[in-house]
Length: 458
Image 1 (tube, rainbow, N blue to C red):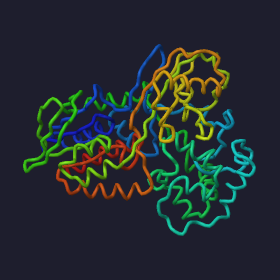
Image 2 (image 1 turned 90 degrees about the horizontal axis):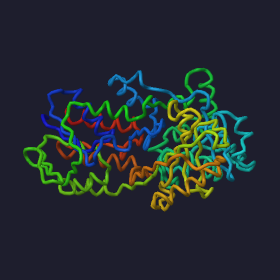
Image 3 (image 1 turned 90 degrees about the vertical axis):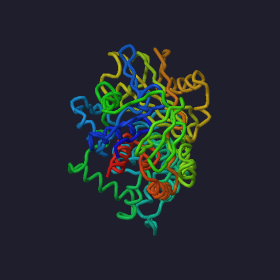
Image 4 (image 1 turned 30 degrees about the vertical axis):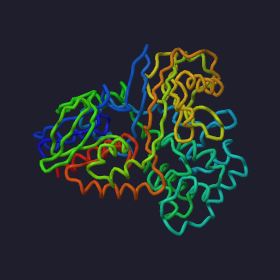
């Protein structure tokens, strides 16, 4: 494999190109990116002393690939952790922010007293959640939807008030179709091993107190000058990088791959890594493998918007004593969640100022994403004004709309990915990578890109 082409200049494609060069420095690497910049949804901007993230603002160290790559790139000294003082979050209930109980992790509590005294759930809701202590485990450990699992173990109120908004903040997904095995498999495994989720979480909480596991908020990392630091370092890879270059067709023949761009230019390659969304890859692979293209095109996506707001600190009544809040769908608001960015990480806003990052759209509210930017911003700002007690207009508003950016891992997702990978293996010199397959976070994308690179040169 002397000539390898990477299609897609997001974090996945950059990681693939970098790994190719690490493995074999004699490989000629060409990276094609359809847009005018590298990084995909990772995009950091600086404005009037504020540091804005238009896409992801952090990565999780529990999955090691992003941290390991940052260290190999010499970026370790620029990595920062979240603010130690306010490592908690809120959930909206009846128009007010309620603190998530200490020790509550996505679906179940690891500490009982904070859960018992929480004002997020009704008395009946708490009783139903506590019934998990006595329920039998499911006889089989197959896949099921998040909604089905939570209703079965914890009840309807736990789903509506906690699981749906917490998971929506991560996957922007519909809980009725979201695959638990593909996204949160540890909860299915907890049920099989411990029978009760609460028992499993209580034991896990004891392990944390014993020092064997840290608080989850400490797992989130970023860079002192924003996530763009990682993109800029990867952009120095020894490869031919062509921006504003869209691939029109891929053809596989006896001598390898022929790639035609939108300008009519043709490139030759021994292997191709498609680090692009599954539906885009499908359009390029129709002639090569119709069954593969069909399975890729069947994958669904949700669209989300990230809206940064700058304020004077004195304009916000809420103490902002946490990292942000999520909004249950049943609250009928225009936003999914909001991060208090200047609280979560240092140096995100000037002194006496605040940076808020709101999210809108997703699988449950596509009509909000479809609104004109001004209309969407007005609605989201009205929600923030009411929920946080904001008394002034924002100093600025920055909107980033990411269309079809979040693949929907529906029930049976991993089986479908296994089928896709079998079909890919039948096509010589082809690898697929990205957030469409086995994880949507930055470490997942990096692992996917690096694995694709290793597959092509093994």
